[in-house]
Length: 212
Image (cartoon, rainbow, N blue to C red; front, side, top):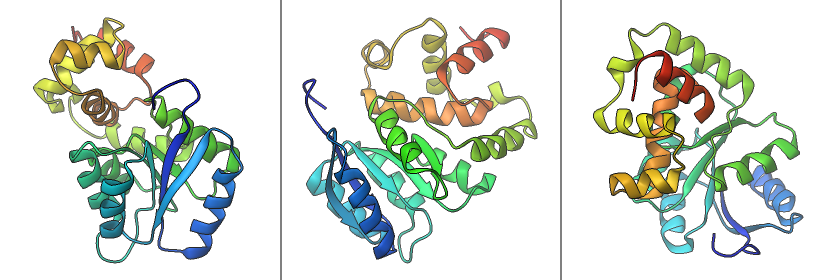
């Protein structure tokens, strides 16, 4: 977003028309949010995001044709927008798949309306809101993996080092010569690899494990 009064532009992606309409109504009642498009499937979503250039995509996962994970991968890969997953599924495989694809947040459809609104705003700020139930699944899955530090890519390790030093995403992007959106994607991937849910926990993890 540009300017303090700019609205957060949102695209809603879900294959259920009633849910799309409900979310459109929910977001439409917020002065700082603007729905700039709705899509019923992954391929349609990618095309719409390329045209509308929203700040945040509210993404379902289970859809016919191109699913939400692949759509997320394409949207984030092209650095078109940030993605917040809103789905019915809380199993570790889907959570990890979505975060690996570049989603910044993961919420469940039984969330209260206020949680969805907070999640959209959090993603727009570069944060990673994750439903507590999904976070438990994620942490449990990560505890079963071997040494997490060994799973990090060199770039993820660099980003984590700078997080430990207290640098903001914009500073990290400038230091590494990459975009701020790419930094966010690396952070989200790093969080799920090491089993944390925010940058404070990541910094503590890095300190305990000798990163940076």
